[in-house]
Amino acid sequence: MSSDFAKTRAQFHLPEGMIYLDGNSLGPLPRGAAARVARTVEQEWGNMLITGWNKAGWMDKPMRVGDRIARLIGAEAGHVVMGDTLSIKVYQALASCLEMNPTRRVILSDTGNFPSDLYMAEGLCRTLGPGYTLKTVAPEAVLEAIDDTVACTMITEVDYRTGRKHDMAAITARAHDCGALAIWDLAHSAGAFQVELAACNVDFAVGCTYKYLNSGPGGPAFIYVAPRHADVARPALAGWQGHAAPFDFDLSYRPATGAERMRVGTPPILQLAALEASLDIWDSVDMADLRAASLALTDRYIAGIEANCPDLALATPREHTQRGSQVSFRHPQGYAIMQAMIARGVIGDFRAPDIIRCGFTPLFINAADVDAAVAIISDIMQNSLWDRPEYKTRAKVT
Image (tube, rainbow, N blue to C red; front, side, top):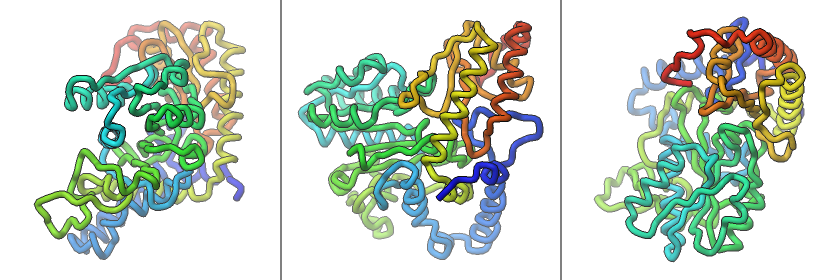
């Protein structure tokens, strides 16, 4: 399969005059999504009402859609299930790992991890009581910090601020050698490049779909459970959708077989419909082609900015093996610079304290977009166009 990125670009709604470099935070609208959601609303919800759970296959969507995502993350069929939020899935994975490794009480993560993951770990440790602790180290120190006190590692494969990519295979192997389990957060990996969960022998993985996978704001998360754990892991959040027979209405919980036990609440059918429209585009994408195009775009952007904006300091690794599909530069006035970029139609985002972050998704971003963005950013920096009061007033969302 060979990817045609001009064709995939045409399948997204991109506002005229906008260079959208924020698909790593919220993916753009697939052109087919509105019709797909409308069909779900009008024909299924409207005409079928509650019978849609059977007639339209709503009840099976979490596993069916999970199988479509499995290809993008190197997972076995039947071991990815959709639903709830990423934080919920992080909690489920952590709780399962701690129960499966009962003689240990340390969760190991890194200081570059997304705060919500760390908050969930802290909260779980407080719930479980004395002795349970979250240990964080610098991203570069994770491998050497894994020892025989660690119950599980919880690592986001690509650092949300810098775009630095962890070595999934090496960290997972080290965890297993030390008797620990490995959890991976794929928030900035799924759809950015080919992930290889099965090949890396990962225990659990979680991810969201509203970034590179374009399911829309608040789109559902997913969780992967390795086959060897699928009938062993006990979900701490034992929702009725994860029951072996939800409509038996048992008063006691019996987990479903396999990954389906990680279902919690009623699946978000409308958001899953939007995600299906995006996955129709993804079905035509070869992940090796995607990675090659992504690296070419990020290389081009780095070279252009460094040649024209000496005041911006690169925060993202230059080495391809250590880079996701985003590029970050540092500047003390990063927030104001990003607001000036947005005012000129280059949409990225700011991450405290000083990160100017842009994501590069070959499905809808090309070399011409990169060159145009570089030209605008260069003008902003060379002429200090960011130095205006209106660009320095913080909005609620940055």
